[in-house]
Image 1 (cartoon, one colour):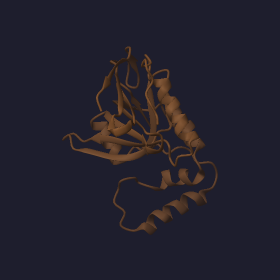
Image 2 (cartoon, helix red, strand yellow; image 1 turned 120 degrees about the vertical axis):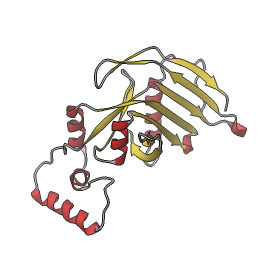
Image 3 (spheres, one colour; image 1 turned 60 degrees about the vertical axis):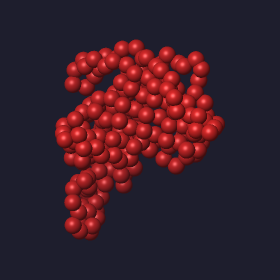
Image 4 (cartoon, helix red, strand yellow; image 1 turned 90 degrees about the vertical axis):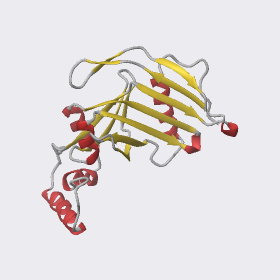
Length: 209
């Protein structure tokens, strides 16, 4: 059974990276699957699963990718904060993340898009994510048209990454008889520009289950 370290580390991000690596090494299906919660301007929440693609241990943000025309993107443009959770039942671990969200630099999104399987690249071009679909065959035709063009596919301008900068995170480890362990970290983020923050030191507190 997974337990939390004692004493607690001053910086939780190396442990976050370790947990992700251990989830991948355990052979779990989609070990980076992350439930991402956003809210619209009326504070109505929505949640969906995305894939966590990168953790910046040095700066303290995680990266996911999506269509910039999707519902989640519209909500993030209006209310640029999100919360997320990863849960690994087989390991008895849960990771909660919170903070402001900004778009990734274009060159970062370009570099990641180039590594995607061609089928996924085609899908990114063909799908108008979250838009109504009256005829599934129409989506298939658009995908076939993109595929028929041949050659390398550049990243669509309407698709790319987001950085979720962490001002709070919680590490959770399963315990016997529901005596779970919880360790919550918080820190202050000060905006430097449209896409970067200066981070203060982490503070931590153990919480009751």
